[in-house]
Length: 484
Image 1 (spheres, rainbow, N blue to C red):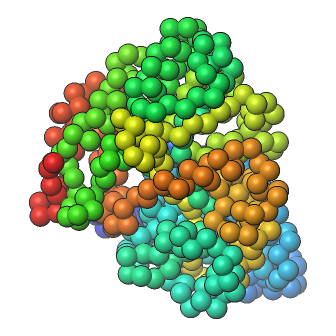
Image 2: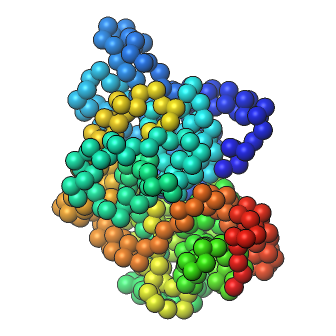
Image 3: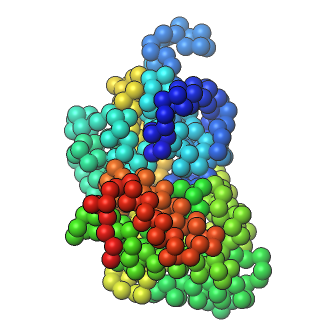
């Protein structure tokens, strides 16, 4: 949360800039919201809460409250599933005295977190409703940017009658024990692969790797036999892809060694260990053997979109370590419609490093709708959230985004269960791990991204680990780290 630590003079300029940014935001989202990686805003709509009850600009004599809903748009604007969903739900909202405006921030995930943190500081720039990645929610709550909503959810029937999966509530509960948002999706991660390419090179179409060596061997086979225009293996490896690099790459590897960022027994951050070295060696192998994409493709903010929307549908990517949401790109109306995806794509669980128990690993995350502390219309915003995240509207959103639902009732709905891959990616949650609910995690995550990118660009793993140890120790304090 470096933006929060900047000097006052810079903050003043930045907040003025933010107001200008929001006044020029465009409508948009992606079908791939949880996929980090993809800066500059696009044009139309305002991010600040605007009308507190006066007449609207169209000349309508009826007083309307204008609610602004801010989310991350990774570059596809009004074609995005989130934008379309907001428009549809707003049009159906029974309270016609309330107007809901989508006010996206077009940015990479890391830039989104910085920009939204800046916006939330001021009543002049804070939206009425904001989408929060559950990993950053605790930090934003600790900074005083979000409004606790315990009273509201405790009075909401859906929250208390089993409609929501109980475990998913943990993601919106901060370290102070208070609830700061309503989750609208979750996700799991695995190895997506092109079955046609696998068949072409003699790999099994029902691929089930048991170890990291199995994954590397498959990538080597693809490199040797699939053709020079095919990227054998793709995972996020740059600072520009933000949390996708931390969570979908490094933590998927580290947790697959049996280690965690914070040791369960001691409560300390592990900064040097064999698990860290094993994870970095895997990343080094991918790049040293040229099994991955060109660095120019993987180290920029559009890396995730390039892999999912360009390389995979065109048959130019063999294996992709990514999230359950990517199929949202391929459905009708998605960012990269690909009707054949359900037949061409396969997904396999990411194995543990040596096949040790539990055999596979996934990281789960998700997003929530939250009320900014500086929002102007909290009561109206809460009423809209309840409507927007009821069963039917929640189902439309997760299907459109290609996400996994957080509602137990939606999980049983035939329209949801009939979506390709929903059942298997939901099963992956049985072995799911979560990022630490620790307010230092966002800062540590930034150091993870730096470490991974340094290895990807040629730094020796032990050197990168030593630098990581120094940086994390500086962030959390010497008493809160350990070596294994």
